[in-house]
Structures are given as structure tokens and as C-alpha cells.
Image (cartoon, rainbow, N blue to C red; front, side, top):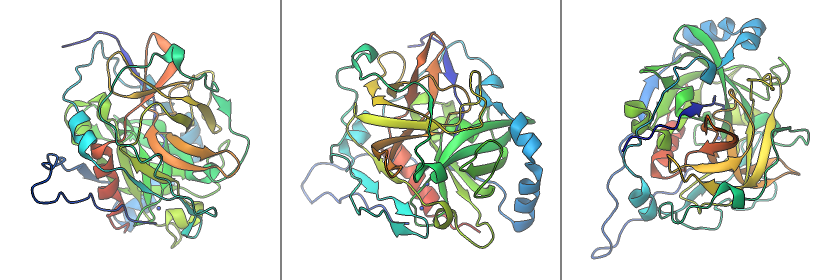
Length: 363
């Protein structure tokens, strides 16, 4: 069924050390295994030293400041056809998570597990209206410091010949070089973006941790083939900088999949469309609700604007340490509801993207 409400893509943001445990094997005679998840789509980016130096030089301070939020550049779609459902696969998957790491690859100081409540999602269930969700902080600057000021950052790239920006976040990973963001921040309109870089801790034009160039980009097959908003997820593998890996420099946030819905969340990003200008890290917080209109995504009361796409949503976020468990990303807003932000449910498809990225060597 085609629905006509307009979706407004935001812009993406885009944290590395331990392996995800493999999915539990089914015992003989037990329940049938879930269908195999289609492999993520991979795209080579700047995978040689020469290309990486060229991309890094390309992004001058002036070009970063002039980059526009992606939704200001993208064609406005009148309607979106949502294809398929991940509910069955999600309900069969085991909960999985990776603990956060501090700079230098160490585990988070408190050593706590980041598996959430261990629940497995089983589809949408009964929709919870936004009016019943806990009221969120509406796009406030993050001033409390902590790990998130290093793991979160701005993403810059060239889209159809024009420079654009999103958000992203460094996560714990085997290669210590993985950034999570949204699908439309790596590919839109049939082609992958070029000149893709991640700037962790971006602050008023300053790049305190340097500019990290993507060597490989990944997204879900559903986003790649049909720009299915339910699967607007992506990851980037970034090259070492000055001989060091990303999360050895900035640390990494934990990441979890197949978790219970409607939980307390903190969302971060670098909104760059008015009234924001992309110069600082902004956050919202509140209890997530289920989208009851056109997607299977999670919703949050939040007024962040274009440029925040790809920014992380955290479970169990500790405002004192700035550590949490990444469990979604800023993805889109409805044109008639600017106060609601939506992010994809992190099920088996998102987990496959993460696994593919974190298992890729950073040249």
C-alpha cells in the first residue's frame, strides 16, 4: 500500500574492540533457524594512501563550514513505499551487544555489561502514541563532557557534486575503526557518496581529533535497493591517522541489537539546518515510542534538524561519563511533525552491517 505522507530525511552522523558473540546454534529437533540475513552492500571508498591524503586535503575548514545538511539537497519524495518486514527475523535473533571502550582500547571503567534488559524484539506490538511517551529534552547543546564528546562527530561527503554533512559515532569494534551512521549518509539517489570523512568531537570548526577518511562503506541491502526507511543504517571503516586507530584515540561506544522497544533513549547529533548551524553537539532525551504511521522505526520527541542524521541513540546512557549503548541513529522526520525524530530499529540487518564493517581491515 502506498502512503502519501512525506518523509524528510535528516543528515547523518556517524564508535571500536570486542567481537560480537555468534548467534546461538539451534539444537537438532529444535525451532527452525531464522532465514539467512542478506549480506550488507559494500562500497570501496578511499582505500589507498594517496586517495586518503587527497580526500583529507579536500576538506578545508571553509568547505566544512559551507557543507549543507543532506535533506536540503535531496529530492523531496511525495510518498514512500515500505517494503517487507524484519519482524520475524528480529524475533528469532538473540540479543547481542558490545561493551564500550575508553581511549587506548580499554574497557569502560565501570566494567558493566551493555546488553540492555536481554529482551528480544518481536515486531511492533501495540503502538504507543507519542503523546504518551515521556517528554524529551528538545535539542539542547551537550555541555556535560564525557566520552560522547569524542565518539560523536560530524560526517562530511560529496553528494551529486555538492558538499554535505551528517553525523556519526565511533563504536567498539574488532578493527577499532568503525563508525555507525544512517544509510542515506553513505548512499542516496542511486550512488554512494564520495570524499567521505568523519570528524569526531567537531566543535565550532575545530577538529580536536583529526579528520578520518573512509576506506569502505556498508549499508543494508534494503536501503541500497529501495531506500527502505526501515533499514536506513550504515557503517564506515576509516583509515588509521598518524599510525593510530580511531577508537584508540577517541574511545568507542557500545552497540546493541534486538533489544526491547520503548525504552529511555539519549539522541545526539550535529544539526546544521536552522535554527542550528552544525557547530556543536546537541542532544535530546526521553522514552522512545513506536512509529504508528509509515514505518517500523522508533520515535523520540526531538527538534534536531537536518545534519543530525546518523547521530547515535543510546540506551543506558550515563550523563556523568558520557557512555552508553548505541541502539539506533537519527534517520527522518515527517514533514508535518517537526517535533518527532525517528530512527531504525536495530535488528539483524543492522547487526549484519556492523559485523561486516568491524571485520574489515582498515588499510
